[in-house]
Length: 191
Length: 101
Image (cartoon, rainbow over all chains, first blue to last red; front, top):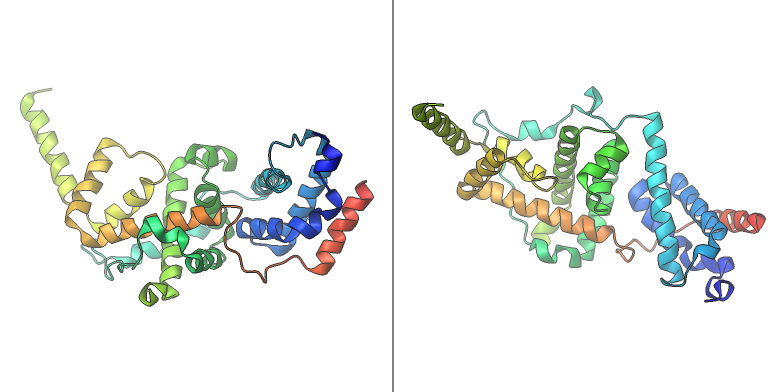
């Protein structure tokens, strides 16, 4: 396939810029970093135009590069900070949800939605995207890698240099926070 | 090991499984989404879930959360259309691409 004909880099920003940016923002949160990652992605794409084999669409190819660049971003943060649990992460609301017998003080509410059909509810997906902003940076990255990117636990531990037990605790706390945030949106009563 | 010692160990294990609380079970429910639990932990969780409606709700909620997050990970995930690169940002990126060429 003639690469020059199948790729049109002059139109990338206009055609895919917003989609790449939104995709990045879900994962990275910070708008400036997200914009930078989009730019780095498109520059990398320009450099490796010859590797575009035409097997995927131009858009999928760009998203493929973007995914690598996002992971590079997570890795670069690892140098400056640790992903291990620290005393700063000790505010665990989960502990306060039980009486002295270990029973829920307020048992989990029944959500009027079947988990198998949850993903069809776009309003809820957007609500989750908003709730992610409430997580600390560390919890957010770990949750995103595990549940949004679907990375294997052992790969996350390796990439982020954390112990498996810490990973499980972080994910448990992140899930509880997100669950509470979704419930605060009251959607489960509106269904 | 003597058979009666084995029996005592088993009864103690069984008692620990049967006495699991919601507080013990929550982390196990979450963990089971991240790796396979040991035999002992798995049965402690299963025994408790069999008798606890609240914790079964918790399982369902975490499954919902996983389904939503998975959808959010797709390239065509729903997004707020107002979330866009600013015209200035687009211009900056476009310029960087031009300079590179």
